[in-house]
Length: 310
Image (cartoon, rainbow, N blue to C red):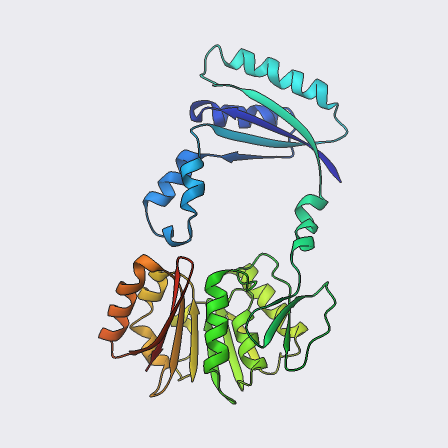
């Protein structure tokens, strides 16, 4: 299906009124890209670890209002109608530039086009991640992990996931009982079992992640070895694990530090990733103060991954 996409550069003051105008003209949906709101979220610092600071600096002051109309409409006439309405609105509201652009969009742009750029790749020395829609002939000794990321985090291309997977390859032992907290696509749980772990519990709070994780477990033929559940650490039965993955962000890694002891035993290895370098010392100090000993650490880009022994 094709759509006419309208994009208007305006002010924060006029953005809501313009969105309402577009809806009244028959838009199927509207969206606002508001740098002011974006900066307010970042100022809270809660999820600053994953923010692209270069992108933030490039944000201007204008709000972009987008809307989508059926391609049955005449695009030129639609733009003219919008521009006339904006001209009238500018008499009582500061609409800024009020610049209006239009282009024809297709559903496929949002649906499957991104798949063209997701090809088989080596996640670790032994593990190759293969998208479900790609063919791949493994080399001797390679372990193939079939993955469809859907809307979940964890394709293996991000440094944090890659470091955690490499550490998993080093520390997973045959028969291990594994916990993957904040599992996303379940890439770490699946890789651990493919490396020889006996079982894994993959947990995530997000609906979409849990759905994708279950699908990935099924397509890798590991439904008997990996259980996927929706929830948080507090929702998991208190039992000990041989190896625990926590690839989230520093704030959550810190928030579960005390409770995680209930899921360890002497010798349990805790693999932490998703830690921005500036938060490394804070995480190390917190975990060592709880009796965990730092066994190994690795860095990639701005990120740090840590291995602790219980």
